[in-house]
Image 1 (spheres, protein in one colour):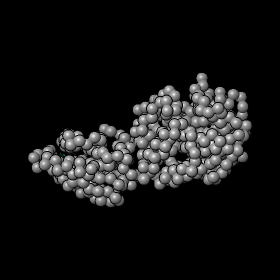
Image 2 (cartoon, helix red, strand yellow; image 1 turned 90 degrees about the horizontal axis):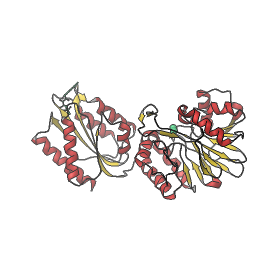
Image 3 (cartoon, helix red, strand yellow; image 1 turned 90 degrees about the vertical axis):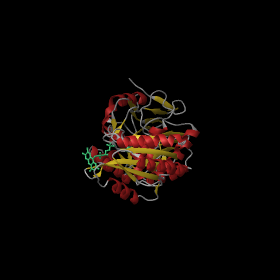
Image 4 (cartoon, rainbow, N blue to C red; image 1 turned 60 degrees about the vertical axis):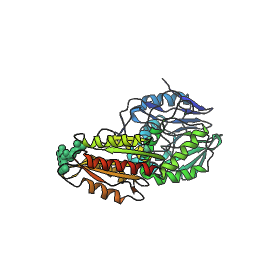
Length: 399
Ligand SMILES: Cc1cc2nc3c(=O)[nH]c(=O)nc-3n(C[C@H](O)[C@H](O)[C@H](O)COP(=O)(O)O)c2cc1C
Ligand SMILES: [Fe+2]
Ligand SMILES: [Fe+2]
């Protein structure tokens, strides 16, 4: 049974929602599912833009066959070879053996690794800036190197002012209802979590793509995951957010309090700090237990807020490994342009505090707020005073 949506007179949504896939890339939790978006343009030529994940094949094929309605498929444009979009490439080629596969140099390299080199006669190689006329519509291709993977490009359908943006502007969360964001409200946190965890590692390449698309008049924005956008205000807002995130600029003032605790004493200190900040009028406070909240959510908020407080105990004379793992993530992201504060916990000693201090000292353009200190097992009068002072310094840093 088909499940498709008409986007414009001749552009159709043929993507598939997976409402129960537990994790994206077997790593990032998907409490609200995920969508694998795909589109068909019916012009003098027929064009399929991307396929879908292997978990969505049956529904996808139903959608493609029903929208083509007996016509052959002339072009398959592959924006991205990653399996969440490329898993059904070979299935489509086998269904439509004469289809021209539109891709960049790397696209075909990866296609041959995932499948085989049996389809070389079908290749239609494109370079940055190339155009392809498919009837009344012209497809203009823009390379988006490393906007997730090296082969990625985006397509601008000139006559319809549609940008098919590949993974850029995508979101976790399946589509439940109307696919357009002017009808179904967007979840900006999930768009940010997607950016931070999927695209941000190569965020400079995202900036490069943003420069390219600045010149385009975009009326409809179609990412490969999540809701579609046709409301100018929303499109402008998303592009603006992407500019901020791609530079790792602070989006808004706010404090992330991330802690590790085994027996609850460090957690109590984290909680008291949150209370003190809240009573001092701080609005954006996020308190995270690093052992129970998936890092992808915290990393999303790291891209959002100005301040990070890390509290962690000693563990076999070093920093607790969960906190070490979190610091590794911050290093991997090139953590920058933020305020940070540090609290350790020690019963019999170790390098927890110097470990944290040394790691943060390596980050560029970060500012230490308040004095780092060590709680001896649990807060007593002296360390509660330290915490008080720290809260005051954090409040000052937010002004
Ligand atoms: C496996 C293990 C190793 C530990 N190693 C150390 C250590 O090297 N140094 C230390 O001061 N405390 C060590 N501790 C004790 C806790 O870090 C310490 O009691 C701390 O105050 C606990 O904070 P919490 O109540 O937030 O869990 C260890 C605890 C465990 C379970
Ligand atoms: Fe991807
Ligand atoms: Fe993707």
